[in-house]
Length: 408
Image 1 (cartoon, rainbow, N blue to C red):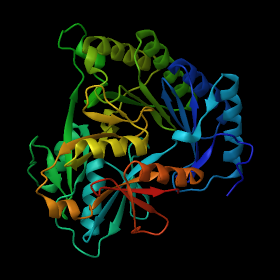
Image 2: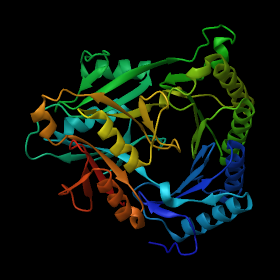
Image 3: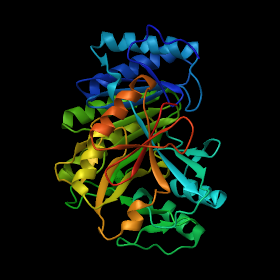
């Protein structure tokens, strides 16, 4: 692997180089994106996630090792960021993934990869082609764990994708919301159909936001033909969002740009957000772009607990998350990793509480931060468990739900 000495703030994470740069606004982050477009030239644009508090940049393909050219590019990006007054802060770098254990791997792998609309990114690992949502790894379970998981996954996709998947698996959805489906091993997901973004006040023509979908957040995706076009769209979106006083998630990828309100963040002023969405759609079309909303999804994690407050406190501390003002969710303050929800569990379900989950959550952190993150987890009420896989460290929350730490 190439040496990263002299490239301050960057860390090797998930095989590639990652950095977070604090920024005061989307406009400043978009300015760095423009500089990166100039730096890469004919090279593929790195993953570039714009937030109103900063920017995450990831160089390289997940699962591969960074080379010297990656280190050189990282140095150039750091220099450009410094010129813009942006400082790198590696402390919050982390990536969440899902691990599914099963004694019936082939049909389980097929179920999950199809439900998410994921593609293969390695041996028994599947991921989001847009590299926004958490990858899934699959592992063989030698002894049955028959009871219902306490960790579950919610996925929202456009309604036609959900309908097609339900038809393919031949299941009737169940559960309190009528959206739950189960894989051949009994692992459940809530697969929620998304809808159109509309303004109930009728202040905006529906055609003006036809590119958008509501998947808990309001979002759209525009394929782009070049890094330069992606950079121009990002700059336009940042300017419109800052002007409107709105926080947006703007993710640049080599093949396109995703624009996302974040979960529920558009609901406090639907009419105002719809007006912004319409202006963004107009800006994209002026650049000759057409949306592909079929590629979008939203993912969040749920945990069943008896002592919800204690379990929520653990995950808040370990992940560095914040509680939503409404008290419903935990969210990543950088809006880079999935939201968490917590659901009340019956204290009488002692057997289910003692069973190790077949669905587990993984957290990739930089190698030099692993021990401090483990110390934080134990101080928050966690317990170190024997790892089920080489190269991992397992910590259980106060009720036994596991978080698996990895560094690569």
